[in-house]
Image 1 (cartoon, helix red, strand yellow):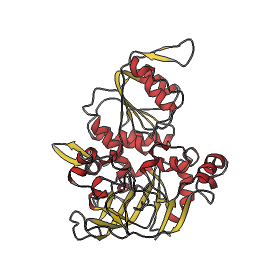
Image 2: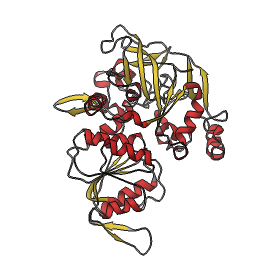
Image 3: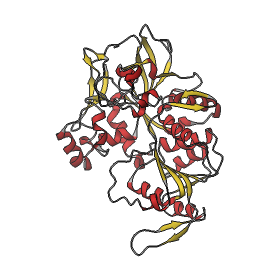
Length: 418
């Protein structure tokens, strides 16, 4: 089958970190570890597994971070390569194992890409605490080989499909997945809405876990799909207070308003004024940047995770407020953590999705996300700005990586298109 795969090597790392500054060929082209062509299609490893035909797959910021070698190496032990990328996936069921009951051939499905203990072949007491609690995004056995056999060898380590050598991701024509990963997509949702289920669920998980909401105001930092999805999720799950979105570009601001933002501000002076409007006063230390006291935002979602946004969040949070980290923060040099203790700030990270308590039931984040998409009628398809055939993956990656120039928000790959 046709697929885009990526392999990690020391020479590739050196080329990417050096030549990648002057040519994208070292990141997405012939000098990189990316390859487009035929790869072996694995067989179904068990009765509860399913084969999928990929309809659409998204390009995530974490994909760009890994391909450009900007991500922290700390998560390297929890992936195996070469891997077919793609963890934001809408697909159609092509084949089901004899024990599959939750989906049928022909159904459209969204894929939870997390590789759980169940998928690795660990059941009962052998499952880790995270998986037992329905939160496999922090699976504690992701660095181990599983007992499930994929084409004659044990399943290799990996936290998610898309960064695992044995289970191809969505940048391919077909995939194999475990039944537990699949969630049927309602016919009322378009393909472009269905493929957003995974990134929308990231913000939904954070919003659900941040309840009960206070009176606000809330600040959401970021203008990508996770930030915009978080704005929608906060409103969809009941937050009614002031919601300030820090956005860089005009078309992203329009979507933020459509999703429920009260105010949209640009980074810098406009964001500073929004902080002052909460009742904060500015002070200038003898050395260093301006600091603030009084007012502040009781809840901030940092959906970027850069040194600049983390620094801002620490200074903008109200005493005893909370910073929710959704951006893939990595190594941050010279990070001043003074206000963590000086303001008694809580910092909470969230990753992926899992079982949630919602309206008296225990359901998966994808199920809550789909139900609220149908309930709110939010125009989430507006986040999809570009859609490329799989063979044009280089153009797609360049478009996704250069948002200022291209205006991209969510870029898709279509394996079914020539």
